[in-house]
Amino acid sequence: MYDTILKGGRTIDPSQELDSIMDIAFKNGVVAALDDAIDGPAAQTIDVSGKIVTPGLIDIHAHVNWGATYLSVEAETVAKKSGTTTFVDAGSAGAGTFHGFRKHVIEPSPLRIIAFLNISHPGMFGYGPGFMVGESADLKFLHTSACVEVARKHSDLICGVKVRLGGNVSGTLGTIPLDLAIDAAEELDLPVMVHIGPTPPRRQDILERLRPGDILTHCCRMFPNALVDRERNIRAEVEDARKRGIIFDVGHGRGSFDFNVARAMIDNGFVPDVISSDVHIVSIDGPAFDVLVTMSKFLCLGVPLMEVLRAVTANAARAIGRPEIGTLKIGAPGDATVLSIEDGAFDYYDSLGQIMTGEQQFAVEHILVGGAIWP
Image 1 (cartoon, rainbow, N blue to C red):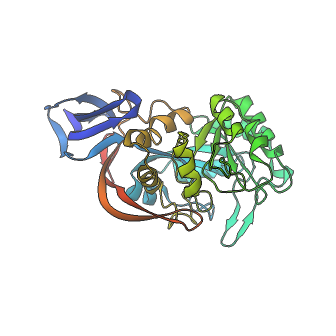
Image 2 (cartoon, rainbow, N blue to C red):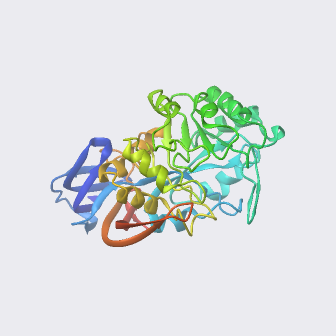
Image 3 (cartoon, one colour):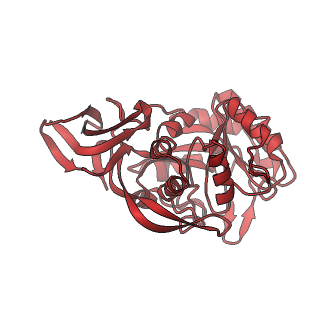
């Protein structure tokens, strides 16, 4: 007997290039069957006709070290609104604070939480109401050996090394924090996720250092350090970086998303590889809200539905080196998100206060975690 069957939904699984009306069955925490019709007995059968069934959504840029940093929010609260089943914390904790993050937040959570480990030993300790203490601005905090040691000890949860760059977070150190993060990541055979902020350093100096599989987050940020020029063209160094295998992640957040840049990227066929929210205490009430609202913005900007879902499932899973999630293949973890698309007039905001009125928005109908309805 199956644990749960979802019947009659439009199953969209980019990992299998699948878009079809199908039934999906879950048993013992994994996907057990996927077929045109599944009639076996189940503890729970849910009619999802007219809805979209997709692999559980993955938000690869969030801050969920709740209770330990002012910046972070509670994953479970965000998930109920956004349909996220996997949160990837983007460097809230460093080597000196990850143990507590694991014990007090990750392990008790019913959701999957993975993390980028901040190259700064204390992590993002200085982000508060009206102030910012850049954790990358002081060399005394940038401890590569400790980063490597803790990442190895917690290799089941750590998917890469995070570093934040920009005048407000790395001060006058330029690319030194990035160079140190890459040193640690190379030793661990993991990617770096680099936050690009206002200069210094310049995007050219960042991109030329990145390796295939490294992730540039906040890719739709505004001038300075925008990835498009004043003529709305993708800059040459950005095109070159994508050809080398650099991954471009949205990381919306409070101050890193410009509709004009996003439109220019899409118009040039340069759709971000991954859509993420950068949800935290300052962005959870807008303009980012969560990954589902960010997805809605890209749907309204003209990105095809399959590609929007790819950016929060298969592409996101590949970016963090977890190909076993973000898919509905038989035997995969039984995480799924059931969505609807509502029609109407919906106002969306970017980080500059610009408003885009879209005609559609995603809404969550059901969340499955480990093959069972949650919460």
